[in-house]
Length: 272
Image (cartoon, rainbow, N blue to C red):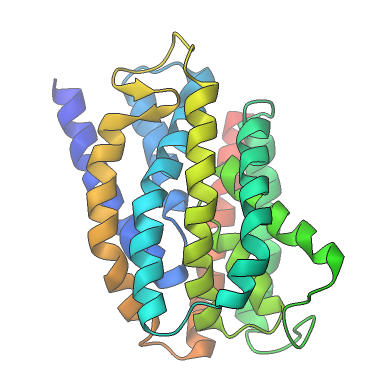
């Protein structure tokens, strides 16, 4: 019983941090939720072969209400690019479904290494060139561009994140203002997390190694502890984001990505 009490407190604390990050950077909080959940499940003796699947699936489920809360807060400030959402949403969704399927086939350390490399490259751009070297003057409309939101949905779903990490860096490369990129990314989090959660539920329904209280690879006690805290704290993160200048927010996001990439490199090496 003590183990589950400790887990509940850890999940509440995780939800608070994840909620602030969701509003601040337009992410769904998965960057925080996934590693904490994986460690907690390991402490409780859950099979190592499925711990990451449960952590990612549960993270995606918590991102659903978080993304709604964060996106609403940004939309009230006019910081959601509705045009980009309309053009990209379907392809983000398709990518999220694909990512949920691939996640069951690929070792987690491979995914962590790929993500960490991409995050570090983008962090370099955000920190050292926050307002320069955009690839285009605006978000492209060419047919090939559909590959970008599809990839965002795919990688985000595989990693159990809301898409902000990839969406913000991509939109800023296309000359989207940082505040608008963050707000748009928050809405993409919903498009990614909903189908991703369904995919992880279905793929884990028959797994006998699941911890108590799980629906497929989504752990319901973890969801119940994290989700309320993230919803309550996401608007606070959004308010903090709009108190920074565009340059400062770009640099802050870049430093955040450095931390994320180093953590993922470490995880990949240790799990290897």
